[in-house]
Length: 121
Image (cartoon, rainbow, N blue to C red; front, top):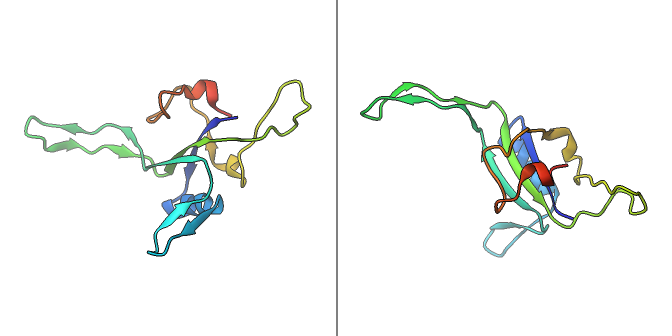
């Protein structure tokens, strides 16, 4: 089962730590790559309020950024918590739930046009 989760962390480093705990390896050139099958998009410190600019492109009012680092995950192949249950439920691995946020829309990013509202936890 595939599910979508949207998460916020106190810093890039905190997000990287959670992502790396999912499984990474290093090739012969020192490049790291995931060993898990989930799709992760690092959104960073997202814009909460757009800035304003004059006709010359000069900033009149600075944009307001989130103080949290945002990550979207398309969890692939999750197993149900209880396969015998009438209604199946799923949970993210490695205690990601504590960083999950709920949105009433699709947010600033989507996976291949999938509706977050239909695939969220």
